[in-house]
Image 1 (cartoon, one colour):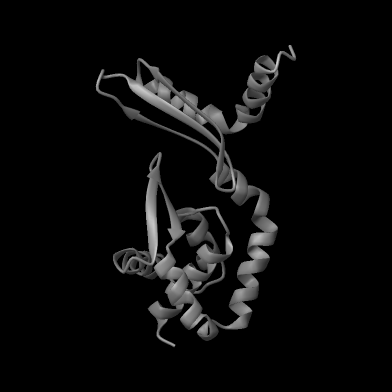
Image 2 (image 1 turned 90 degrees about the horizontal axis):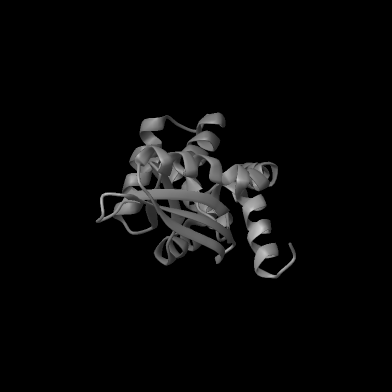
Length: 173
C-alpha cells in the first residue's frame, strides 16, 4: 500500500470514528507519530491533499486547526476502508477509548476572539454537546490581552459559569 494512501486512510478513519467532534492537528499528529507510522511532513502532505480533494474540512480556532470529515470523505472511506489493516483500526479505537474525555473536552469547550469593526475584540465562548450548542457567550472587550485572558480561562471555568448562569436564570440563587 502506498505510504501517503495509508496515512490518508488513517486520518479519514480517525475523523470518521470520532463521531461529531473535530480533531486538532496536535491530536492527529500525536497518534500517528506516537505509533511510528510516518513523519510530520507526510502527515501534513496527507492532510493538505485530503483538504484539496474535499475529503476533510479544516477550521481554525485560536491558531489551532480542527479537522472534520466530509460526506465525500465518508464515501471514500467506505470504499477503501477494507485496505486499512485491522491492527491500525484497533489502535485508533483504543486511542479514542483511552483519550475520550480529553478529546471531548477539547472539542466541546472552547473560546476564540477576533478584532471587530470598532477596533475592540469580540470574544466567543462555547460549550457544545455533540452537535448542539449548550452555551454561546459573545461579548466585546477593549484589548487583545483581555480577549486572550478570557479565552485562556474559559476551559477551566466554563462549567462553573454555566452552572451559575442556569441557577440565576432559573431563580435558584
